[in-house]
Length: 200
Ligand SMILES: Cc1cc2nc3c(=O)[nH]c(=O)nc-3n(C[C@H](O)[C@H](O)[C@H](O)COP(=O)(O)OP(=O)(O)OC[C@H]3O[C@@H](n4cnc5c(N)ncnc54)[C@H](O)[C@@H]3O)c2cc1C
Image (cartoon, rainbow, N blue to C red; front, side, top):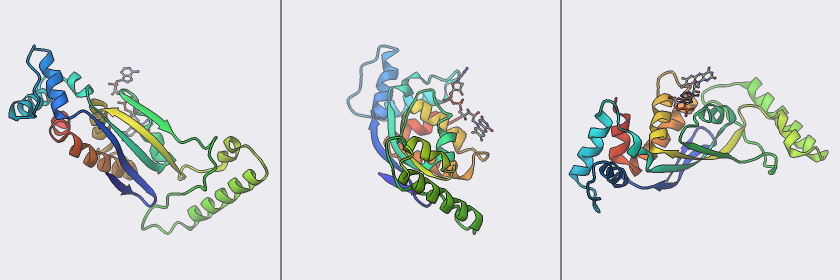
Protein backbone atom coordinates (compact mmCIF):
# COMPACT_ATOMS: atom_id res chain seq x y z
CA UNK A 1 0.00 0.00 0.00
CA UNK A 2 1.36 3.40 -0.98
CA UNK A 3 -0.04 6.92 -0.73
CA UNK A 4 1.46 9.82 -2.69
CA UNK A 5 2.11 12.93 -0.61
CA UNK A 6 3.19 16.42 -1.81
CA UNK A 7 4.62 16.81 -5.33
CA UNK A 8 7.18 13.97 -5.33
CA UNK A 9 6.77 12.19 -1.99
CA UNK A 10 5.04 9.11 -0.72
CA UNK A 11 4.37 6.87 2.25
CA UNK A 12 4.63 3.17 1.56
CA UNK A 13 3.87 0.25 3.85
CA UNK A 14 6.82 -2.17 3.98
CA UNK A 15 5.49 -4.59 6.63
CA UNK A 16 3.12 -4.66 9.58
CA UNK A 17 4.37 -6.90 12.39
CA UNK A 18 1.57 -8.63 14.28
CA UNK A 19 -2.08 -7.68 14.42
CA UNK A 20 -4.85 -6.61 16.82
CA UNK A 21 -4.90 -10.25 17.96
CA UNK A 22 -1.19 -10.12 18.91
CA UNK A 23 -1.93 -7.19 21.22
CA UNK A 24 -4.92 -8.86 22.85
CA UNK A 25 -2.91 -12.04 23.43
CA UNK A 26 0.03 -10.08 24.89
CA UNK A 27 -2.41 -8.39 27.30
CA UNK A 28 -3.92 -11.76 28.25
CA UNK A 29 -0.51 -13.06 29.30
CA UNK A 30 -0.51 -10.67 32.26
CA UNK A 31 -3.52 -12.33 33.85
CA UNK A 32 -2.80 -15.89 32.75
CA UNK A 33 -5.49 -16.15 30.06
CA UNK A 34 -5.21 -18.52 27.11
CA UNK A 35 -4.21 -17.04 23.76
CA UNK A 36 -6.96 -16.78 21.14
CA UNK A 37 -6.35 -18.05 17.63
CA UNK A 38 -9.08 -15.92 16.02
CA UNK A 39 -9.82 -12.26 16.79
CA UNK A 40 -13.24 -11.97 18.43
CA UNK A 41 -15.42 -9.50 20.34
CA UNK A 42 -13.68 -10.30 23.64
CA UNK A 43 -10.35 -9.29 22.05
CA UNK A 44 -11.90 -6.07 20.79
CA UNK A 45 -13.37 -5.27 24.21
CA UNK A 46 -10.04 -6.00 25.92
CA UNK A 47 -8.13 -3.67 23.58
CA UNK A 48 -10.68 -0.86 23.96
CA UNK A 49 -10.60 -1.24 27.72
CA UNK A 50 -6.77 -0.93 27.68
CA UNK A 51 -7.07 2.27 25.65
CA UNK A 52 -9.51 3.77 28.16
CA UNK A 53 -7.78 2.48 31.31
CA UNK A 54 -6.43 5.01 33.76
CA UNK A 55 -3.55 4.74 34.33
CA UNK A 56 -3.16 3.53 30.77
CA UNK A 57 -1.96 0.00 30.11
CA UNK A 58 0.11 0.52 26.94
CA UNK A 59 2.81 -2.17 27.06
CA UNK A 60 0.81 -4.66 24.91
CA UNK A 61 0.76 -2.04 22.11
CA UNK A 62 4.56 -2.40 21.89
CA UNK A 63 4.28 -6.02 20.81
CA UNK A 64 3.38 -5.03 17.25
CA UNK A 65 5.01 -2.66 14.82
CA UNK A 66 4.75 -0.97 11.48
CA UNK A 67 7.50 -0.37 8.96
CA UNK A 68 7.23 2.41 6.35
CA UNK A 69 9.28 3.71 3.46
CA UNK A 70 8.97 7.49 3.20
CA UNK A 71 10.05 9.97 0.58
CA UNK A 72 9.78 13.50 1.95
CA UNK A 73 11.60 16.85 1.97
CA UNK A 74 14.54 17.12 4.38
CA UNK A 75 12.72 19.64 6.61
CA UNK A 76 9.84 17.17 7.10
CA UNK A 77 12.24 14.27 7.77
CA UNK A 78 14.04 16.44 10.32
CA UNK A 79 10.80 17.12 12.20
CA UNK A 80 9.83 13.44 12.11
CA UNK A 81 13.22 12.23 13.28
CA UNK A 82 12.84 14.17 16.53
CA UNK A 83 10.62 11.22 17.52
CA UNK A 84 12.87 8.44 18.75
CA UNK A 85 11.46 6.35 21.56
CA UNK A 86 10.25 3.03 20.11
CA UNK A 87 11.29 4.03 16.58
CA UNK A 88 14.18 3.02 14.29
CA UNK A 89 15.13 5.30 11.43
CA UNK A 90 17.39 4.77 8.43
CA UNK A 91 18.01 7.38 5.71
CA UNK A 92 19.40 7.03 2.21
CA UNK A 93 22.89 8.50 2.27
CA UNK A 94 23.93 11.23 -0.15
CA UNK A 95 27.47 10.23 0.77
CA UNK A 96 27.19 6.98 -1.16
CA UNK A 97 24.63 7.91 -3.81
CA UNK A 98 24.73 10.60 -6.48
CA UNK A 99 21.08 10.96 -7.29
CA UNK A 100 19.66 13.90 -9.24
CA UNK A 101 18.08 15.98 -6.47
CA UNK A 102 14.33 16.57 -6.40
CA UNK A 103 12.84 19.61 -4.70
CA UNK A 104 9.54 20.33 -2.99
CA UNK A 105 7.51 23.20 -4.40
CA UNK A 106 4.54 24.15 -2.22
CA UNK A 107 1.37 23.88 -4.30
CA UNK A 108 -0.57 26.98 -5.23
CA UNK A 109 2.43 29.21 -4.69
CA UNK A 110 4.30 31.02 -7.41
CA UNK A 111 7.60 31.26 -5.60
CA UNK A 112 9.97 32.21 -8.39
CA UNK A 113 12.80 32.98 -5.99
CA UNK A 114 12.50 29.53 -4.44
CA UNK A 115 12.55 27.95 -7.89
CA UNK A 116 15.63 30.01 -8.77
CA UNK A 117 17.33 28.92 -5.54
CA UNK A 118 16.59 25.26 -6.33
CA UNK A 119 18.03 25.61 -9.88
CA UNK A 120 21.13 27.28 -8.49
CA UNK A 121 21.58 24.57 -5.84
CA UNK A 122 21.16 21.76 -8.36
CA UNK A 123 23.59 23.27 -10.80
CA UNK A 124 26.19 23.89 -8.05
CA UNK A 125 25.75 20.30 -6.82
CA UNK A 126 26.26 18.85 -10.32
CA UNK A 127 29.29 21.06 -10.96
CA UNK A 128 30.91 20.01 -7.69
CA UNK A 129 30.40 16.34 -8.59
CA UNK A 130 31.82 16.93 -12.08
CA UNK A 131 34.87 18.48 -10.40
CA UNK A 132 35.30 15.25 -8.41
CA UNK A 133 34.31 16.86 -5.12
CA UNK A 134 33.24 13.92 -2.88
CA UNK A 135 29.43 13.53 -2.70
CA UNK A 136 29.45 14.02 1.08
CA UNK A 137 30.85 17.52 0.49
CA UNK A 138 28.94 18.33 -2.70
CA UNK A 139 25.64 17.75 -0.88
CA UNK A 140 26.31 20.70 1.46
CA UNK A 141 24.77 23.10 -1.05
CA UNK A 142 21.39 21.28 -1.13
CA UNK A 143 18.51 23.08 0.63
CA UNK A 144 15.94 21.86 3.18
CA UNK A 145 13.36 21.44 0.41
CA UNK A 146 15.39 18.61 -1.19
CA UNK A 147 13.67 15.23 -1.06
CA UNK A 148 15.24 12.44 0.95
CA UNK A 149 14.20 8.83 1.46
CA UNK A 150 13.94 6.99 4.77
CA UNK A 151 12.60 3.85 6.33
CA UNK A 152 11.07 3.87 9.78
CA UNK A 153 9.95 1.13 12.10
CA UNK A 154 7.56 2.16 14.90
CA UNK A 155 6.13 0.15 17.76
CA UNK A 156 2.39 0.84 17.65
CA UNK A 157 2.63 2.78 20.91
CA UNK A 158 5.38 5.01 19.44
CA UNK A 159 3.38 5.40 16.25
CA UNK A 160 0.30 6.58 18.16
CA UNK A 161 2.41 9.16 20.00
CA UNK A 162 3.90 10.38 16.70
CA UNK A 163 0.50 10.63 15.05
CA UNK A 164 -1.09 12.41 18.01
CA UNK A 165 1.58 15.14 17.89
CA UNK A 166 1.85 15.45 14.13
CA UNK A 167 -1.90 15.45 13.43
CA UNK A 168 -2.30 18.27 15.92
CA UNK A 169 -3.49 21.60 14.49
CA UNK A 170 -0.14 23.13 15.43
CA UNK A 171 1.89 20.69 13.30
CA UNK A 172 3.25 22.10 10.03
CA UNK A 173 0.96 21.33 7.08
CA UNK A 174 3.49 19.14 5.24
CA UNK A 175 4.26 16.75 8.13
CA UNK A 176 0.53 16.74 8.94
CA UNK A 177 -0.14 15.35 5.44
CA UNK A 178 2.44 12.58 5.94
CA UNK A 179 1.04 11.72 9.40
CA UNK A 180 -2.47 11.51 7.89
CA UNK A 181 -1.30 9.09 5.17
CA UNK A 182 0.66 7.03 7.71
CA UNK A 183 -2.36 6.84 10.00
CA UNK A 184 -4.58 5.70 7.11
CA UNK A 185 -2.16 2.85 6.35
CA UNK A 186 -1.68 1.89 10.02
CA UNK A 187 -5.47 1.88 10.59
CA UNK A 188 -5.84 -0.75 7.89
CA UNK A 189 -3.28 -2.96 9.70
CA UNK A 190 -4.45 -2.39 13.31
CA UNK A 191 -8.05 -1.15 12.98
CA UNK A 192 -9.09 -1.69 16.60
CA UNK A 193 -5.81 -1.06 18.41
CA UNK A 194 -4.79 2.19 16.77
CA UNK A 195 -8.14 3.83 17.47
CA UNK A 196 -8.09 2.49 21.05
CA UNK A 197 -4.64 3.83 21.87
CA UNK A 198 -5.40 7.18 20.25
CA UNK A 199 -8.55 7.58 22.32
CA UNK A 200 -7.91 10.04 25.12
C1 LIG B 1 3.86 21.27 16.76
C2 LIG B 1 5.28 20.97 17.17
C3 LIG B 1 6.22 21.99 17.21
C4 LIG B 1 7.53 21.72 17.59
N1 LIG B 1 8.45 22.73 17.59
C5 LIG B 1 9.74 22.48 17.92
C6 LIG B 1 10.73 23.51 17.91
O1 LIG B 1 10.45 24.66 17.61
N2 LIG B 1 12.01 23.19 18.22
C7 LIG B 1 12.37 21.92 18.57
O2 LIG B 1 13.55 21.68 18.87
N3 LIG B 1 11.46 20.91 18.59
C8 LIG B 1 10.16 21.16 18.27
N4 LIG B 1 9.25 20.14 18.27
C9 LIG B 1 9.71 18.79 18.57
C10 LIG B 1 9.26 18.32 19.98
O3 LIG B 1 9.85 19.13 21.01
C11 LIG B 1 9.65 16.87 20.21
O4 LIG B 1 11.07 16.75 20.18
C12 LIG B 1 9.10 15.96 19.15
O5 LIG B 1 7.72 16.23 18.94
C13 LIG B 1 9.28 14.50 19.57
O6 LIG B 1 8.38 14.25 20.63
P1 LIG B 1 8.81 13.38 21.88
O7 LIG B 1 10.00 13.98 22.56
O8 LIG B 1 7.57 13.21 22.71
O9 LIG B 1 9.21 12.01 21.16
P2 LIG B 1 10.26 10.91 21.63
O10 LIG B 1 11.64 11.44 21.64
O11 LIG B 1 9.99 9.76 20.74
O12 LIG B 1 9.88 10.61 23.13
C14 LIG B 1 8.66 9.93 23.45
C15 LIG B 1 8.35 10.16 24.93
O13 LIG B 1 9.38 9.55 25.71
C16 LIG B 1 9.62 10.35 26.86
N5 LIG B 1 11.00 10.88 26.81
C17 LIG B 1 11.82 10.98 25.72
N6 LIG B 1 13.01 11.48 26.05
C18 LIG B 1 12.95 11.71 27.38
C19 LIG B 1 13.87 12.25 28.31
N7 LIG B 1 15.09 12.66 27.96
N8 LIG B 1 13.49 12.34 29.59
C20 LIG B 1 12.28 11.94 30.00
N9 LIG B 1 11.33 11.43 29.17
C21 LIG B 1 11.67 11.32 27.87
C22 LIG B 1 8.62 11.52 26.82
O14 LIG B 1 7.47 11.13 27.53
C23 LIG B 1 8.32 11.62 25.34
O15 LIG B 1 7.05 12.24 25.06
C24 LIG B 1 7.93 20.40 17.92
C25 LIG B 1 6.96 19.38 17.88
C26 LIG B 1 5.67 19.64 17.51
C27 LIG B 1 4.66 18.52 17.45
